[in-house]
Length: 332
Image (cartoon, rainbow, N blue to C red; front, side, top):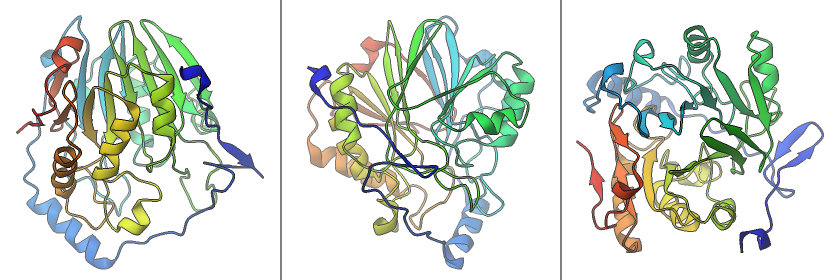
C-alpha cells in the first residue's frame, strides 16, 4: 500500500532548496525587547526540574532514549549509540539556554553516529560538535544535502549527506532521511543553500521517527504510509506564538498531535520545548496546549504520550510502549 503513495521531494532552484514549487521565503520575525527581558528573568527564576544523570546510570545492553533538551536526544538503538541535533550550550548570545542539558558532555557514553536534521545553530551547534569529535574520534555524522561542506571546512571528514528518502545501514539499524517543512541557514546570506528534513531509525526491535524542526504539512501522512509501523515519534511542540508566524516553520502543540495521528505512530515523545525561548509563549505553555489537544482528539487506545524532563531515561522496550492512550504521562 505504501508504494502507491507518491513521495515528496525537495525543489532545488537557483542554488537554493524549497519545500515545494510554490514555496517562498518567509519574512523574518524579530522578537521584541519585551521578549528578551522576559527570557532574561526566566533564566534567573528557572525552576524546571532536570535530571543530571551520570554515565553509569544509563542502561547497558538495551535500547534507551534520553532527552537532553530541545531536539537533542541520546539513544542506544540496536548496537549503536546516536545523538540527534546536538546542542549542549547556548543557541546564540541572544538566545541563551534556560534549562541545562540532562547530561554533561563529559558523562556521555561513546557515540557512534550523529543525526542532523538541518543546519540552524540550535540544531547543529559548532562547539558541541567539536566536543563530540574530540571525545569520539571515529564518530560519523549523517547530514542533509549541502551540509557536508561545513564539516569539511572544520577538518571533520566522517560525514555522509542525504536527500529525502535516501538511507544508510548502520550496525543494527537503518537510517532514512525524510521530508520536513522548514528552511536552513546559519547567517543572513546562506538562506536555504542546504537541505533540511527528518529521520527514521529502524531496527529489528523498534522504529523511531525524529521530526527535527518542521511546520505541519502533508509529509507526515506520506511518511506514515511508507512506514506503517512507527513505534515512537519524537515531535516538536513549540514555539507556539506568535501563531501567524510560527505556523509557517514550526509545529505548535495542537498541530503536533495531528502530525502524530497522520504518522500513525504508537507513542508520542514531546521535544523542542523548555530549553530556549524562541517565541512569545511562556516556556511551559506548550505542555498545557499539548495535553488539551491530546484529550480533545480522543486518541484511540494503544497510543500514549510522554512529556519528560531533560535527563529522564526512557527504556525503549516495545511491550512497555503499548499502554492506554488515557495514561498521559507528565514525568515530574
